[in-house]
Length: 235
View 1 (cartoon, rainbow, N blue to C red):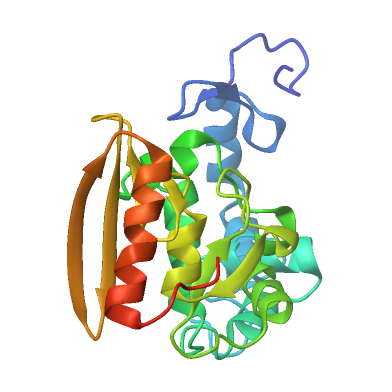
View 2 (view 1 turned 180 degrees about the vertical axis):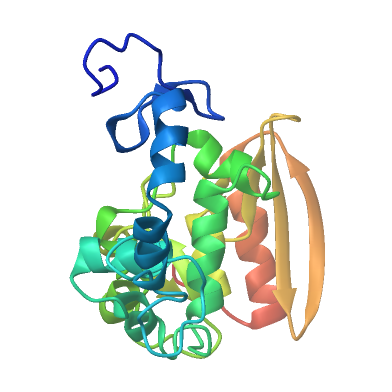
């Protein structure tokens, strides 16, 4: 590109980002001359420029395009509705499942979250349906209301957060679903290469030690169930 004045070989005006451009098709020198000669045209154009976004209630100055600020222009271009995001977010933060949903996102997407290494760091993701603008609303539609005392749980602990792999589960179900829980109340500790046996009854947690053999650990657990619960629980 070059200056539209015949015979002019001057380079364009230097933009702050480092590239050259030609305002109104002129080089820098001819553009300055054009400005001096056309003050009336420039003033008239300024009067026709909106001083704020044309969306009712938005006071953002210096419209980006088509009389809209950059925020509303992007919404209009992407969704065909300048208020699309606001409409979808109405009541979102007050929904009882919002914190659960945000917790999932942080674990999978935020490297600053303390639990990221166990989730996003291991490749666990959120499905496309639960992502984006409609993600939260799709999440509550798929999961339904959360039963009292239940939290979000993945059936396959190595799988992603998606409708087919998620459920509401109580603490006992989740503990049994942990990758290191071999049997109810029997947990394998790789560090010691042993099985730890525990039992909670009437609000009291009893410890029965560490065992090398799984069969022995399960036997001790069942004996504890008979002693403190009066029966052996179903697996």
